[in-house]
Image (tube, rainbow, N blue to C red; front, side, top):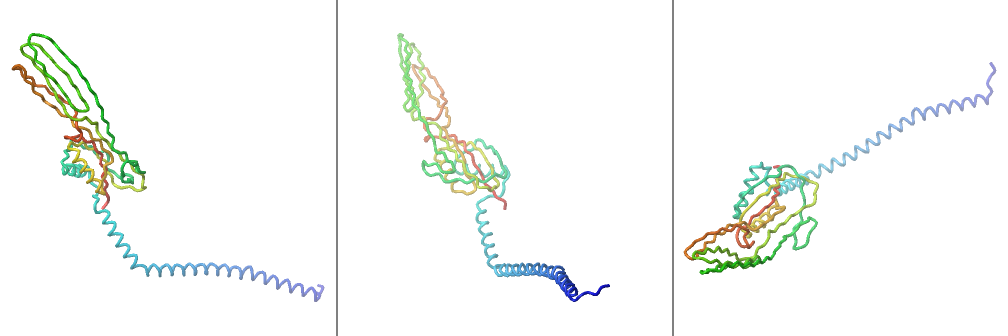
Length: 292
């Protein structure tokens, strides 16, 4: 075998040193650096966790105080609200409320009693309509006048006159000839006014609660109903979403005596004055309940 020259030996030595250095870097230095980076990240995360835990421990008294305050506030908010009531409980609640304002319920229908989306209602302000979509009271008054005359001529004449004063007026003159004469007279005084209605809609809040929608028919005076509206407006656990009021129907009996003959007639119709006597009311309640 030919002996290696000094130059060749030097080159082989350099190559071996390069291989050893490259292998050391690839198999030793790089893996060690990777492990060091992982451990350093873990140490940084552990330090951050330690700081967070120390802050949390230091803030425990403040957190407990805030929690107690939140519980007390939640209890105060839930206080005026009833727990979830069955249909019988809703019936008793609204019936007693209406009777306390001298409004007699004639019918009650529970449309729903389940979890429903909670709507936001803005307070009604005058004639302005807010974002809640509140429609005020509408009223219509009409005037009709009819005049008729009926006349028969004979030996004996008795005249009866029927007169009505108000926005709706009917006047008629009836004359009949004979020994016995009967005249029916009906008289109504006042202004006839159609019913008033109001409907309120709300905007979505994204949350839900127990809600019972109840439609009731009531009878009573308009003053008592306004007192009920004020009372419900002051309660946070219910609203009146819509209502319609109209004059109550009445039967009027009129007796007339003419020439020793007596006649009694009955007239059934609308009470002429809305603000006068009893009215019929159709009202829709929405009762809100919470879990306690």
